[in-house]
Length: 291
Ligand code: ATP
Image 1: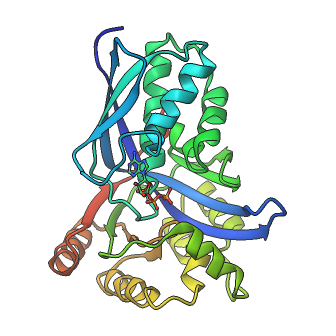
Image 2: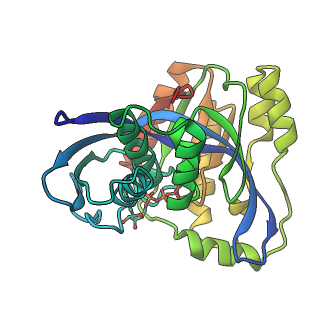
Image 3: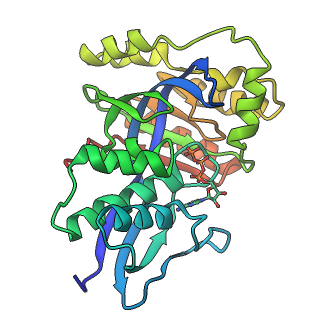
């Protein structure tokens, strides 16, 4: 097991995000249609002789110790595998913007779980890997397999859905990030005016009707009273004006994406947005990974 293990860690976007209840334990119950996209980090795992688990990334501000979700995932895996003293170097080439609502850290953690499981002869089944993931963070369980899924509870109760019909995404992250706990606090202070039609989206996925999906996309966090949402709305308007079938903020933001059935229109939107917002990307759908 000396050779490096290489995994792609795909970003996620929320086709929809609904908060259905505030729970006694402080968490919120969610209903989210999630999708992995081709924008990804590269994760490389190398076993070491020592017992330390650490991460190295191309960005100076990403933690290398247990504050890094990838490190926490490796620790969880080794403990579950009965080898808590293993040492590991995790190299991450980050391309997914941080604080974007695209599960940048969670997907690195999920890639570590998949990679280590392979190195250990597929010791755990996919359900156990998702359980380990959920103990690391709410979005990690989804990122183990990715694809198109309905996520409920804190995000760990997963139901695979039919794949999103073929389309192109333009994803734009403004300079600012939005803190997840802060946004949940603000959400608790407003009464939501609108909810996404989650059932309608699932039904449209079953009929492979992209237009019907796009008409129903919505994220309740867009309702939060925060002046940064004005920028989110401005980007949504650019996406729609350039021919997006639908546009919505992903997760707790600040990234916004538009969905296109026309690659040329998507390219033109990308060019227009990129002039103002450097962190703009084009991406396509990623299918579920067989684990
Ligand atoms: P989510 O969609 O899950 O809310 P996010 O896009 O808001 O995620 P991330 O990019 O996952 O946010 O992470 C932002 C925070 O997580 C930063 O404070 C960062 O230091 C920390 N972090 C921990 N592990 C990682 C990692 N592997 N990659 C990036 N950030 C990480």
